[in-house]
Amino acid sequence: MNERSAEAPLRPVVLVIALVHLVLGLLGFFFLPEANDAGRNTLWIFSATGMLNVIRTVIGVLGVAAVLKPSAILAYCWIVFVAFAGLTAFGVLSAATDSAGDAVNFGWADNVLHALTSLAALTVALLVTRRTRRTRVRA
Image (tube, rainbow, N blue to C red; front, side, top):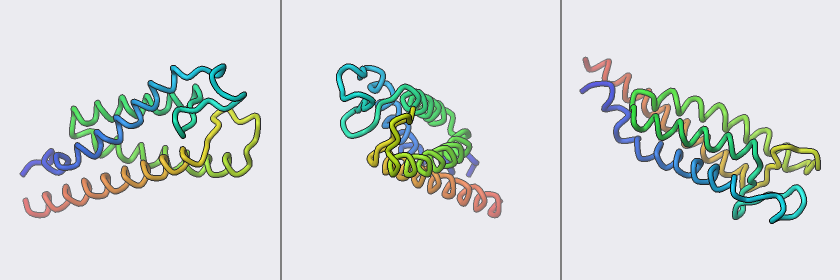
């Protein structure tokens, strides 16, 4: 059993994470400020600001690349975990204060999405690490 087999069953989970963020990021670029209330660009229930769209698009593209190269899944999941844990913490503070000058403009739906993404990435990273260690111990 080689190291790539540790990531293989988890590739669909990483692909779902990547595609959700890629779709939200790309669609967010089409929602202009004139179509919504002042300072509130939304895509369904999620915020759609320029910075957030770039973050989501980059995470989505990196995720698709990681799925195509399974050895990158572990690094991708740790990066996503750290990034989205930070975004969740910032987003909770941002949504709780509701400051008008906030460039990212997080809402509670974004915070839930980021927290779930962070937890999913952590779970995948821990499972890959665990399976890789088991493989090394057996060999």
